[in-house]
Image (cartoon, rainbow, N blue to C red):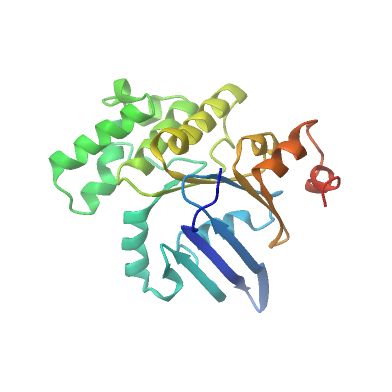
Length: 255
Protein backbone atom coordinates (compact mmCIF):
# COMPACT_ATOMS: atom_id res chain seq x y z
CA UNK A 1 0.00 0.00 0.00
CA UNK A 2 1.40 3.42 -0.95
CA UNK A 3 1.61 5.74 2.03
CA UNK A 4 -0.24 9.03 1.78
CA UNK A 5 0.11 12.15 3.88
CA UNK A 6 -0.13 11.13 7.51
CA UNK A 7 -3.38 11.58 9.38
CA UNK A 8 -1.73 11.53 12.83
CA UNK A 9 1.78 12.33 13.98
CA UNK A 10 3.72 12.23 17.24
CA UNK A 11 6.71 14.57 17.21
CA UNK A 12 9.44 14.19 19.87
CA UNK A 13 6.90 13.25 22.53
CA UNK A 14 8.10 12.72 26.07
CA UNK A 15 5.82 11.84 28.96
CA UNK A 16 6.81 11.97 32.59
CA UNK A 17 4.58 11.10 35.54
CA UNK A 18 5.12 12.42 39.04
CA UNK A 19 4.95 9.51 41.53
CA UNK A 20 5.42 10.77 45.08
CA UNK A 21 8.70 12.68 44.97
CA UNK A 22 9.98 10.92 41.87
CA UNK A 23 9.58 11.66 38.18
CA UNK A 24 9.02 8.53 36.08
CA UNK A 25 9.67 8.97 32.37
CA UNK A 26 7.35 6.67 30.42
CA UNK A 27 7.85 7.94 26.84
CA UNK A 28 11.17 9.08 25.40
CA UNK A 29 11.35 11.17 22.20
CA UNK A 30 8.53 9.21 20.55
CA UNK A 31 8.09 9.88 16.84
CA UNK A 32 5.59 8.08 14.62
CA UNK A 33 3.24 8.62 11.70
CA UNK A 34 -0.19 7.06 11.18
CA UNK A 35 -1.38 7.02 7.57
CA UNK A 36 -4.98 6.95 6.31
CA UNK A 37 -6.57 3.62 5.39
CA UNK A 38 -3.82 1.59 7.04
CA UNK A 39 -3.89 -1.02 9.80
CA UNK A 40 -1.06 -0.01 12.15
CA UNK A 41 0.11 -2.03 15.16
CA UNK A 42 1.97 -0.72 18.21
CA UNK A 43 3.76 -3.74 19.61
CA UNK A 44 5.69 -4.27 22.81
CA UNK A 45 5.83 -6.20 26.09
CA UNK A 46 3.80 -5.23 29.13
CA UNK A 47 5.05 -1.98 30.63
CA UNK A 48 6.70 -0.83 27.40
CA UNK A 49 4.65 2.38 27.20
CA UNK A 50 2.45 1.42 24.26
CA UNK A 51 -0.84 2.18 26.04
CA UNK A 52 0.56 5.55 27.15
CA UNK A 53 1.39 6.29 23.51
CA UNK A 54 -2.17 5.43 22.52
CA UNK A 55 -3.63 7.60 25.29
CA UNK A 56 -1.38 10.44 24.18
CA UNK A 57 -2.50 10.04 20.58
CA UNK A 58 -6.16 10.37 21.55
CA UNK A 59 -5.57 13.24 23.95
CA UNK A 60 -6.29 11.50 27.26
CA UNK A 61 -2.68 12.21 28.21
CA UNK A 62 -0.90 15.46 27.36
CA UNK A 63 2.80 15.21 26.43
CA UNK A 64 5.28 16.62 28.92
CA UNK A 65 7.14 17.86 25.85
CA UNK A 66 6.55 17.37 22.13
CA UNK A 67 3.49 17.63 19.91
CA UNK A 68 0.57 15.49 18.74
CA UNK A 69 -0.96 16.36 15.37
CA UNK A 70 -4.26 14.98 14.06
CA UNK A 71 -5.46 16.25 10.69
CA UNK A 72 -2.69 18.85 11.00
CA UNK A 73 -3.98 20.25 14.30
CA UNK A 74 -1.82 20.16 17.43
CA UNK A 75 -4.20 18.66 19.99
CA UNK A 76 -1.63 19.09 22.77
CA UNK A 77 -2.37 22.84 22.64
CA UNK A 78 -6.12 22.35 23.08
CA UNK A 79 -7.97 22.69 26.36
CA UNK A 80 -9.35 19.53 27.98
CA UNK A 81 -12.85 20.32 26.68
CA UNK A 82 -11.56 21.06 23.17
CA UNK A 83 -9.61 17.80 23.08
CA UNK A 84 -12.64 15.83 24.29
CA UNK A 85 -14.87 17.35 21.60
CA UNK A 86 -12.21 16.79 18.93
CA UNK A 87 -11.74 13.17 20.04
CA UNK A 88 -15.47 12.47 19.97
CA UNK A 89 -15.68 13.72 16.38
CA UNK A 90 -12.52 12.15 14.98
CA UNK A 91 -11.55 9.06 16.99
CA UNK A 92 -13.36 5.91 18.07
CA UNK A 93 -11.76 3.88 20.87
CA UNK A 94 -12.04 0.15 21.56
CA UNK A 95 -10.75 -0.97 24.95
CA UNK A 96 -9.72 -4.38 26.24
CA UNK A 97 -12.47 -4.22 28.85
CA UNK A 98 -15.79 -2.80 27.69
CA UNK A 99 -17.53 -0.46 30.12
CA UNK A 100 -21.28 -0.81 29.76
CA UNK A 101 -24.20 0.99 31.31
CA UNK A 102 -25.71 -2.23 32.59
CA UNK A 103 -29.25 -0.86 32.79
CA UNK A 104 -29.21 -0.20 29.03
CA UNK A 105 -29.43 -2.71 26.21
CA UNK A 106 -26.91 -3.13 23.39
CA UNK A 107 -28.28 -0.53 20.99
CA UNK A 108 -28.74 1.98 23.82
CA UNK A 109 -25.08 1.58 24.78
CA UNK A 110 -23.95 1.99 21.19
CA UNK A 111 -26.10 5.10 20.68
CA UNK A 112 -25.04 6.63 23.98
CA UNK A 113 -21.98 8.62 22.72
CA UNK A 114 -24.21 10.43 20.23
CA UNK A 115 -26.98 11.01 22.75
CA UNK A 116 -24.47 12.48 25.21
CA UNK A 117 -23.32 14.81 22.42
CA UNK A 118 -26.94 16.02 22.07
CA UNK A 119 -27.44 14.48 18.65
CA UNK A 120 -30.98 13.87 17.48
CA UNK A 121 -32.34 10.65 18.98
CA UNK A 122 -33.59 9.22 15.69
CA UNK A 123 -30.20 9.90 14.09
CA UNK A 124 -28.35 8.37 17.06
CA UNK A 125 -30.32 5.13 16.89
CA UNK A 126 -30.10 4.93 13.10
CA UNK A 127 -26.31 5.26 13.36
CA UNK A 128 -26.21 2.69 16.19
CA UNK A 129 -28.25 0.23 14.14
CA UNK A 130 -25.95 0.67 11.15
CA UNK A 131 -22.82 0.28 13.31
CA UNK A 132 -24.17 -2.94 14.81
CA UNK A 133 -24.90 -4.25 11.32
CA UNK A 134 -21.32 -3.48 10.28
CA UNK A 135 -20.01 -5.83 12.98
CA UNK A 136 -22.72 -8.47 12.55
CA UNK A 137 -24.39 -7.77 15.90
CA UNK A 138 -27.65 -6.14 14.82
CA UNK A 139 -29.68 -9.17 15.90
CA UNK A 140 -28.47 -8.61 19.48
CA UNK A 141 -29.62 -4.97 19.65
CA UNK A 142 -32.21 -5.54 22.38
CA UNK A 143 -30.08 -7.85 24.52
CA UNK A 144 -28.21 -6.78 27.61
CA UNK A 145 -24.49 -6.48 26.77
CA UNK A 146 -23.51 -8.32 29.96
CA UNK A 147 -25.38 -11.40 28.66
CA UNK A 148 -23.08 -11.63 25.65
CA UNK A 149 -19.84 -13.58 25.33
CA UNK A 150 -16.53 -11.76 25.55
CA UNK A 151 -16.10 -11.84 21.77
CA UNK A 152 -19.62 -10.56 21.19
CA UNK A 153 -19.10 -7.75 23.69
CA UNK A 154 -15.92 -6.72 21.91
CA UNK A 155 -17.79 -6.58 18.58
CA UNK A 156 -20.39 -4.33 20.20
CA UNK A 157 -17.49 -2.25 21.53
CA UNK A 158 -16.28 -1.80 17.96
CA UNK A 159 -19.79 -0.74 16.93
CA UNK A 160 -19.80 1.86 19.71
CA UNK A 161 -16.43 3.16 18.46
CA UNK A 162 -17.90 3.43 14.95
CA UNK A 163 -21.16 5.16 15.83
CA UNK A 164 -19.90 8.74 15.41
CA UNK A 165 -18.34 7.86 12.03
CA UNK A 166 -14.76 8.68 13.06
CA UNK A 167 -11.84 8.62 10.63
CA UNK A 168 -9.58 6.83 13.13
CA UNK A 169 -10.24 3.75 15.28
CA UNK A 170 -7.85 3.21 18.21
CA UNK A 171 -7.89 -0.21 19.83
CA UNK A 172 -6.07 -1.00 23.08
CA UNK A 173 -5.40 -4.74 23.48
CA UNK A 174 -8.83 -5.65 22.04
CA UNK A 175 -8.08 -9.39 22.12
CA UNK A 176 -6.42 -9.49 25.53
CA UNK A 177 -9.31 -11.29 27.26
CA UNK A 178 -10.47 -13.43 24.33
CA UNK A 179 -9.91 -16.97 23.13
CA UNK A 180 -8.12 -17.54 19.82
CA UNK A 181 -11.27 -17.90 17.72
CA UNK A 182 -12.88 -14.75 19.14
CA UNK A 183 -9.58 -12.89 18.80
CA UNK A 184 -9.33 -13.78 15.13
CA UNK A 185 -12.91 -12.62 14.53
CA UNK A 186 -12.22 -9.26 16.19
CA UNK A 187 -9.02 -8.76 14.18
CA UNK A 188 -10.85 -9.61 10.95
CA UNK A 189 -13.47 -6.98 11.82
CA UNK A 190 -10.78 -4.35 12.41
CA UNK A 191 -9.05 -5.24 9.16
CA UNK A 192 -12.39 -5.10 7.36
CA UNK A 193 -12.88 -1.53 8.56
CA UNK A 194 -9.72 -0.61 6.67
CA UNK A 195 -10.33 -2.78 3.63
CA UNK A 196 -14.07 -2.24 3.13
CA UNK A 197 -14.77 1.15 4.72
CA UNK A 198 -11.50 3.07 4.34
CA UNK A 199 -10.98 3.55 8.07
CA UNK A 200 -7.64 4.09 9.73
CA UNK A 201 -7.08 1.53 12.50
CA UNK A 202 -4.37 1.61 15.17
CA UNK A 203 -4.07 -1.37 17.50
CA UNK A 204 -1.97 -1.81 20.62
CA UNK A 205 -1.05 -5.44 21.26
CA UNK A 206 1.57 -7.74 22.71
CA UNK A 207 0.53 -10.62 20.41
CA UNK A 208 3.21 -10.96 17.77
CA UNK A 209 1.10 -13.23 15.52
CA UNK A 210 -0.97 -10.25 14.36
CA UNK A 211 2.02 -8.41 12.88
CA UNK A 212 1.73 -10.29 9.58
CA UNK A 213 -1.66 -8.63 9.05
CA UNK A 214 -0.52 -5.03 9.51
CA UNK A 215 0.38 -2.43 6.90
CA UNK A 216 2.79 -0.87 9.37
CA UNK A 217 4.07 -1.58 12.88
CA UNK A 218 6.10 0.13 15.57
CA UNK A 219 8.17 -1.87 18.07
CA UNK A 220 8.17 -0.21 21.50
CA UNK A 221 10.34 -0.99 24.51
CA UNK A 222 10.93 0.98 27.72
CA UNK A 223 9.10 4.01 26.34
CA UNK A 224 11.21 4.15 23.18
CA UNK A 225 9.97 3.47 19.65
CA UNK A 226 12.80 1.18 18.59
CA UNK A 227 11.83 0.46 15.00
CA UNK A 228 9.20 1.10 12.34
CA UNK A 229 8.34 -1.78 10.00
CA UNK A 230 6.61 -1.42 6.65
CA UNK A 231 4.43 -4.17 5.22
CA UNK A 232 7.24 -5.86 3.29
CA UNK A 233 9.50 -5.94 6.34
CA UNK A 234 6.68 -7.41 8.41
CA UNK A 235 6.14 -10.19 5.87
CA UNK A 236 9.85 -11.03 5.97
CA UNK A 237 9.87 -10.89 9.75
CA UNK A 238 6.90 -13.22 10.10
CA UNK A 239 7.49 -15.77 7.32
CA UNK A 240 9.08 -18.31 9.68
CA UNK A 241 7.18 -17.16 12.74
CA UNK A 242 7.33 -19.21 15.91
CA UNK A 243 6.01 -17.54 19.07
CA UNK A 244 9.10 -15.81 20.56
CA UNK A 245 9.89 -15.31 24.20
CA UNK A 246 10.60 -11.62 23.80
CA UNK A 247 10.61 -8.68 21.44
CA UNK A 248 14.38 -9.09 21.03
CA UNK A 249 13.84 -12.63 19.71
CA UNK A 250 11.38 -11.32 17.16
CA UNK A 251 13.59 -8.56 15.82
CA UNK A 252 17.17 -9.83 16.16
CA UNK A 253 17.34 -11.06 12.55
CA UNK A 254 16.23 -7.78 11.00
CA UNK A 255 17.96 -5.13 13.13
